[in-house]
Image (cartoon, rainbow, N blue to C red):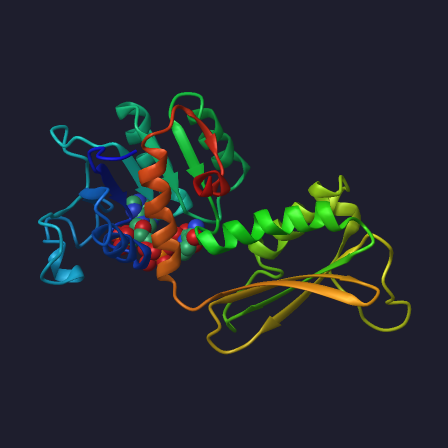
Length: 269
Ligand SMILES: NC(=O)c1ccc[n+]([C@@H]2O[C@H](COP(=O)([O-])OP(=O)(O)OC[C@H]3O[C@@H](n4cnc5c(N)ncnc54)[C@H](OP(=O)(O)O)[C@@H]3O)[C@@H](O)[C@H]2O)c1
């Protein structure tokens, strides 16, 4: 929306690694402004100037444990922990404002709470706020549908040595996009390991390959191969700041939507 007032953002988990990246990402846009930096009540940061962590040109704010009733807000962004989800979600519901959540490790109860909230406010949760990955997911679904089942789909992901889960949530989401586009059951076509004898490829399966090394932030390649040709779609992340850039862009977009459950690909239009 042109000439709209900047979206007023309250950040929850503002003292964390992502909180700081979100402050930086918001500062680079002129369609939003951070109006509150929220941390837990027991945090050592309560009452400290945001500039202490963010630098001299930080917004003129203090870290606060609660949202000041006088502070007007259009959207709350939460990158904290599953244990704390209730707090920012209750704030968003009480204010009837949009809620963007990037917290990972949420269980089915948390997801149900988010979906229930979406009946009253706009809600967008994503385990990966990279806009490039969002587009990769869209392009993967398109390629799977248009190339058809003659093109065999395989997914390769590479991450740093400390990553615990494998394949990555993003690789799984890409696989699900392929299965959905072909109207296959993901559980039936996903193939997570090939080793030893009898490890040939079944028709329709989606194979996953996983590499772990050093400090790789995240790479995903989706390959569609047929006799004589191969299409590869690759995304490489080289900075964690991309997640903050995507979350802030999502927040400015979500602040203008009605109540409902949104996907990050909706932000791309
Ligand atoms: N969706 C994505 O694209 C994406 C990308 C990166 C990370 N993430 C996720 O974002 C979340 C935060 O990551 P991070 O690296 O910023 O973590 P972090 O550095 O540990 O920061 C977590 C922040 O949340 C606050 N917090 C934690 N538990 C809380 C509670 N019970 N009540 C209130 N505040 C609480 C922390 O405050 P204290 O300092 O007071 O503990 C801190 O400000 C994680 O779930 C991570 O997996 C998602």
